[in-house]
Length: 198
Image (cartoon, rainbow, N blue to C red; front, side, top):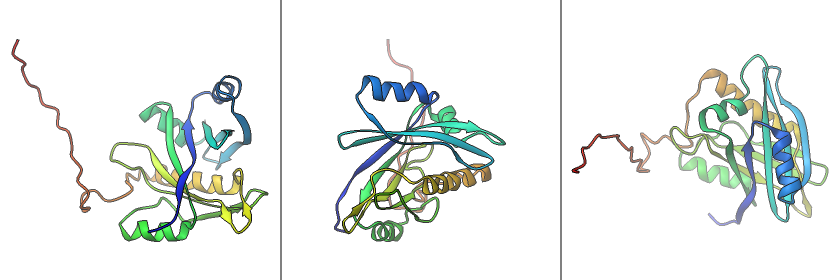
C-alpha cells in the first residue's frame, strides 16, 4: 500500500514523572507541549507529560494505582522503565487499519477520534509486537486538509488507556498477530546446558 509513514512520537513508562520531565526539559532541551493528570478510569490511571524538540516528540507516563494496579506500573514491573509504544503517523489511518487487518493484525480497540484545538487527531493501538514483550504500535493521523493537530486529546488518550485496562483486568494475553497460525516464522530460543571443553 502506498502512503507515507513516519514516527509521530515515542512513549516511555517512568517511575518518577517529575524527574523524567526535568531530564528532558532541563538537560536534553525539550519543551513541554501537553500534559494531563489522572487520565484513565476510577480503577487506575496515569499522569502524562509530552515533550518536544524539533520534530521529536516523547510522551512520558507515570502510573496511578487505585482499585487495580495501573497498566503503566504493571508494564514497569514486567519490563522495566522505558519504551511502551511507538506511534507511527500515517496519511490514511482507516486504509492502513484495513490493510493490516487483512494480514491478521489485531488492535486493542476501535479507532479513536478527537480534536486538540488545532485539528483532528485519530489514533489506534495494536497489541504487543512479540510474545512475552510489552512494546506495541500506535497508528496516528494528524493531517486533514489544511488542519493538523499538534498535541493530544485527553478524551482519546483516556479511551486508549481504558482499552488496555480492560484487557489487563481480563488477563488477556494477545500479540499483534497470531504467531501460531501465521506464516511469520517465530524462532523460540531453548535454553540448553552444554559443557564447554576446558
